[in-house]
Image 1: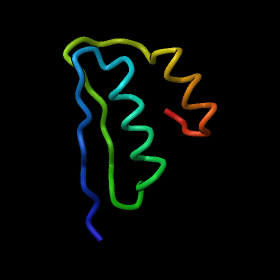
Image 2: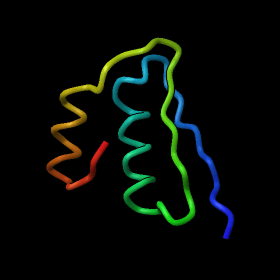
Image 3: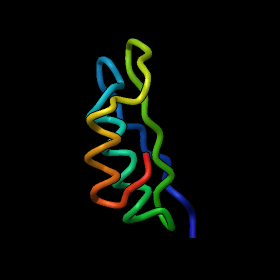
Length: 59
């Protein structure tokens, strides 16, 4: 089976794209290779990390 590369893009790459990539990896890592990017570079958003940790999803 071929893995589909999916780019989650946002302006800041600080929250939504990181979470979307985490969910895609968590739910469909066998068929999706997610990447997260943005126009500006930011570190992981602490709120996104906290929320995803509560959902047991690593970003």
